[in-house]
Image 1 (cartoon, rainbow, N blue to C red):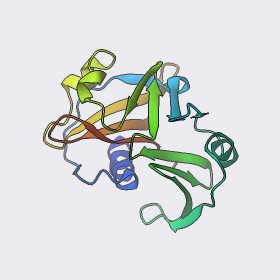
Image 2: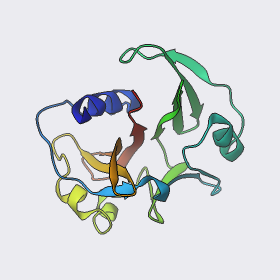
Image 3: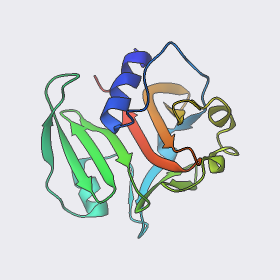
Image 4: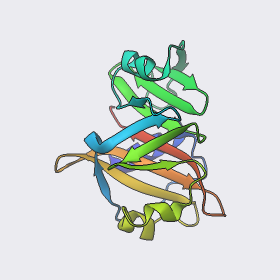
Length: 172
């Protein structure tokens, strides 16, 4: 199940430099209640409804798209540097593509352009076990002590700078 989720996750977030192999690596976990998306004006969103998203970052019209992997449709809300996806069951994923938005994990902010070494102190296992050849760091999301079928994926470039951050659930 987790391997199918990783394929879906990486295709939804656009992290196309990740190609699935039998290459499981231990990663750190973070509780979903300790994950926040914030914009440069510190307006925040915590993976609620589309209405909650628009209250935080402003009204925009969603684009309905076909889900080629699972079938059906999803709604994509695109802000400048942020994509948020909702399927029929609610929030499905978020992708941060520039420094206008940041992810706050356990009170520590990370954004596109930050060095990946900034993750080392808070997430040492994920940092140590990062996918160097694919330039990707993974964190697993939990709810209490239960690990969810959800991840945070942090892509970076050859200079070690974050290029994209994805947060995704598998609600299939």
